[in-house]
Length: 409
Image (cartoon, rainbow, N blue to C red; front, side):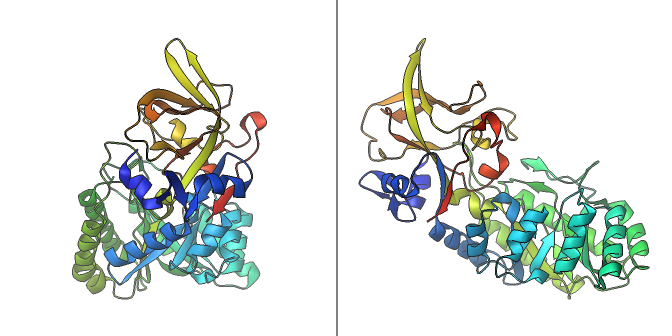
């Protein structure tokens, strides 16, 4: 656990606070453990920091897949410029907020005909992943008497090094291969689709400002080339996101100001002169919500087995799969973790413990051999960096335990 992790939330009488509420009182307010808690003020501050660092001409979109909790989406609808959705339910969540449908984009492979029809009816921008999707959207528009707004998601001809997950370069299920886009543009010219522009997302969870800057430069160069094949001005340029957050002790936080400075140069030197009509979008999910949430779970047993002390909690990987190391980690590493009521115990003797969940599998490991103050049954364990890809990215039905509540404080 890093001091900055705790400092961002605050504390009172040695206990972590979320939204200004001490953890023990918050647990009583929720009425049960485990639960996820998200800090409203941290969310607002996160967006404000992004606004301060990014060029004024950049529009900020929130990728709802990172955390689709309706209260979070509703809160962010007054702070960001748009939403990106990846399913019909996420679309409905976005439409139930105050965000105008014209500022909602729908991306992702394998959209069903029904989902595409819903998107067309709602008036959101459909980001086409294939020729099949283009034909289905055009047909839906003809049947509904609506001219659909679309953009082409491009699988770039370059890959981004240092990303937690590569989403472009080489064969991909995402988007249309860059070399095939000119052919698709010719096909779209014969339809009644309002083609706005392009979306290029090459990789996620990147902590290297120079790598992100280079990816953005390559993205703009690619779109400038593709624009030569279009007989209409590019009005939409989604540069993707990929901004990472530190999860592990050796991670260095992203130099956001460095990314912003490079992006400002890119806007001035290439985007504004070459694509003067484009609405330029940075699409972020994890970077906005990831550090604003915690997973809180209570110790129900403390046992020792052949020299290892196990703290058994009432939560587990069915709620927080990522912290167990089973969501994208090649080598398992611990998320930041603390005993939520003992933050001022730095001078106390610590003990090496392993924190496990209540599921009948050795995969249910939330923290492996971590140094923590002495803890026992009833204490609250806090796992940080839990605001993104937590509950919604976990196998909630596994072993049929209850779903964890989520609260925005």
